[in-house]
Length: 168
Length: 286
Image (cartoon, rainbow over all chains, first blue to last red; front, side, top):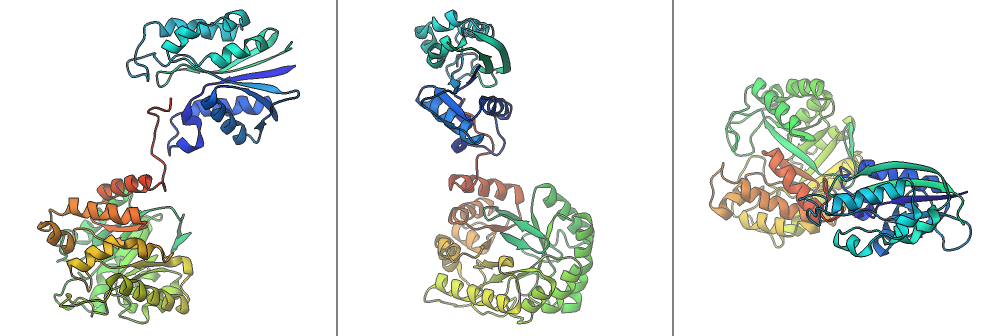
């Protein structure tokens, strides 16, 4: 059985951007619990900034990324950043539909839909989904799914999700 | 660690020391808190504003009617006991140069003796040691308490301030005051003209570099007034500008009339200096 977790690439999770009053306390708690659940050997699927977030979360739970051997997977990605007028990318009317489809595909999970995400639209909506597309095949034979966090407190759609199953 | 009597603080903490005058004639409030109940209201106010320390004084710094030790004690000792009882978490400082007064207020619950007059009474350090209290070692250029500076000059005012406050700190150590309970204060305007106080401000980093925690008392003082040509009552902006410079240099304790304004100023500068995190930063980091 292989474990896979998804966390968002929210930079506020990085220790160098810490506040006195954590603006993402709930998200952070969910991310740390999910990362701890992965165990000690974790392979990271992420872009450059996402990899920093992954490393920081792993370090926080006393783990470190590995590049080979049997491991769990930590995927760093999130939905659009155009969900409201105050959102980083301002309001794009396509954002809600895009995120809802993505959310459903993650929960089911629908590996084919995730593998076929529209990267062009994702870029226009400031969504960081390339690592999710890359990880889609890991979610073909999933037995359990848990969504620990699903919200958009600052105009960006975040999910913290965990899957366990047989990876081909 | 900084230990002020029964209270401990971390090395990156900044502290607001709110002035509470039990005097009929201090320059800024002009007797507004002379009555005990008014002074107590002032304590309640500054505590609610987040001041960590109250500095209770029974004699104004400027020359005036002679106030003996008995009269000074009658103004502050019972008051300290009352504050101690209602505000157990507040650091109580008493602004006095007299060992006899220091002894009585420490017995009543004071944590810190703020000797604005540079150790004029040599037994004050023994009193602090005996009570486990902290002490502020100030530089006054050797002037007699409650006298104004007159034609005082220094080869190097910062050097003099460092040498004298460290000498005083050593005397405190020798008397048995704990090392983490000694604070130094260049004492703006005490034994100094405006040019001296400005230079002390400009070069405060040299005092911080001694490693002793530095207290600054800038609030509405004459060097601010003379620099900006502003009367008492119109010196807040100048005070806060000077406060910023001292905060950037690393001053730890700020003796103030206006607590919230100074707290915001110090927090802002302390954060710019990288010694404090922002309260809540999310912009651009979502």
